[in-house]
Structures are given as C-alpha cells and as structure tokens.
Image (cartoon, rainbow, N blue to C red; front, side, top):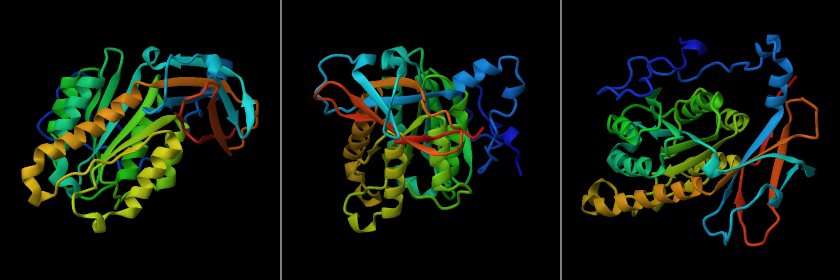
Length: 332
C-alpha cells in the first residue's frame, strides 16, 4: 500500500516526452487526506501564512450567451457569503491569471471505442488553449490513476501523452478527481480539472462527496466532456453517471459538455463524431477564456469546518455568471 508521500511517484518529468507505456508506479487510488496546515504553525511566517490561507478565491465565468460589451472591473462584482456582502479585495482577469489545468482521461474499458476521438480532439484543444504562462498535466484513470505528463506549457508534449492512452480496467473516477485536486493544491492561478469520461465510477475508494469537497477546498473548477451519449442509445444512458457529473460541475462552477458520438457499428460517421468532440472542447476553451478571479476575506471569522454558500452578482445588466456554490471553512 502506498503512503501519501508516494502519491506522485511514476510521473514523467515536466518537459520530458512520455514513454510508450504508462508509468511503472501509478498514483495510489486512495491517498490519505493530508493536514496541509500542520507544519505551517511552526513557521516563522505564521501570520503571513494565516492571512493568505484565509483568502477565499472565486473563479467566475461569464457565459458564452452573455451580452458582454466590455471587460468587467472589480467594482462591477458583489460577493455574498451566506447572504452577507463581502469586500472584494482581489481581482484579476483571465488574461492576467495563468491557467493550471489537469485533463483527466477515463481510460477504462468502457470508453475503448471512443478513445481515438478523444485523443484527436484533445490535441486540437491543447493547441488552442495553451499560452506560455499556462501549465497543464495529463492524467489517465482506470482502476488506478497514472500521470502521463506532468505540468508543461507545451501542447506537443500534452498531445504525445494522450496518444499513449490505452483502454483497460475498471473506473476509479472519484479517486482520480481527488488526486487531481491534491496535485493542483500547491499551484497558483486558475485551477481547472477537465474530465473526459462517460461518467461511470466502479471501484473508487473515495466517494463523490469526498471528491467534491477537496475540489472545493482548493478552489478548482471541474468541467466535463461527457462521452457516454451515443447515437441511438437513449435507453442505455447511465443516469447516475450523468447526475454525478452534473453535481461535480455545478457545485464547482463548471459545466458538462455532451457531444453525441457514434457507436462501433457506425464507423462511417467517424468524421461527424470527431466534429462533435471538437465542438465540445471548443466550447470549453471559450469558457476558460472568459473568466475572472475574485478574492475576499470572510467577515465571518469562525473556523468551524462549516460549509458556506457563495453568491456572486454582477452590477451590470446582460451578464450571466457561473461560479462555485460554496466552500468548507478549515477547522482551527
């Protein structure tokens, strides 16, 4: 059994092209939760660390159908926590904030027939999204979670990593999300987890609630490119999987994109299926380019581990916003 300190073993180095197989030592499926503030109290910079950890950040997306005419400013936003107005102290536009993204591919046997579509569409997505200041990593999730490519700003390395994906095994999706959130915890910038999956989870040690809670703790936004919607198979939909993805994305401020893909006996429609996936990734890229990062220090100083609801309003007409629903306060 792996300990938490081994949770990143087997990774490719950041600027190294992946080998032709998965890492020999996969990430453990269920790392023990870490007490991240345990050693901070012993630091000589205790006050500084405490202040920074009290900052609540909220990534806000202006939706594609918004009638946006000009960039918004800090003064245009109001944040409510449990219904109480908060002072917005930090503000940054998407162009001013680097992206830190983990793209988590479901590599279980259930997605085998769609994996080639995903690889091709993801390559275009990386080419479109990545700027010099951005960093992305590629995870593969089946029975275990493997890091196929560590953080890099090079689209080619990310695409090369996806080409090494092979389908097999069961699906530990919630474990993968948990590990992705931990992977993002130490980073700065806009934290994003992209799930490319049919949504089913069969062998996770972590629960949906645990995966969601840690994602909210690190202020990561989950988006999903749902690959379980197939032509002519409406009666075979996994409603439970769809609901789980809806919960993960809605509660963190993301969205589910659900292209309709061909089945194995519809190979003549491969081009159409790829176009559907391309469109889903394109919509995702558009949302990532219409974001703001807000920050505030809560007027409620209690550190009781409670959940607090967040509401963000824009003080100009014609805007629709998406953001995480709330967060859990650390216990003191």
